Image (cartoon, one colour):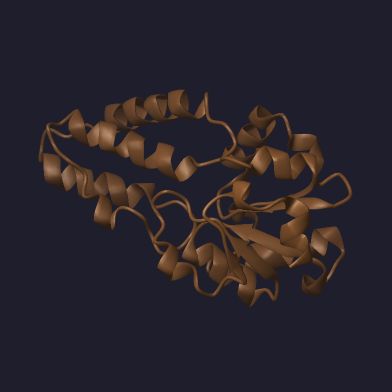
Length: 200
């Protein structure tokens, strides 16, 4: 689910409430985890003394949540999940459980994921491999028995640092040329079936 885009859209929306345009080129961090406070500080500096952090946050989050409420799987992902009945599935996310679990429930596929490992359970975010180590530990398997699917360079770096094979499907805001460390880069999950991906 492309929450990178809904996050960006919510921040663009909030900047426009003040007659400003967000610099998209510097928006995305090179690591996982929450950088909201830095973003609010940047906006406050741009707006000046009249900036109201509380109302700004409430307005942005309400808009973001309205976007996420209708968010669906990226193309091909549902077909992959439907074809993965013989596999044990896990989520390894830098985001906190309070963000990850509601979106999994909304997808209707929460029960398919045996393990969920989140950023608020480890000491460092991607590109650090800590959350992948936690997911592997909870699955009770070693890295060579697993494959990761990522959409950002820092996600790929974390997966590879943990010793996993990694397939990258860049989100709309990721430069695919930065995903060279992945074992395979696809433009979309529709390009191959899950069986084809696993067998490569």
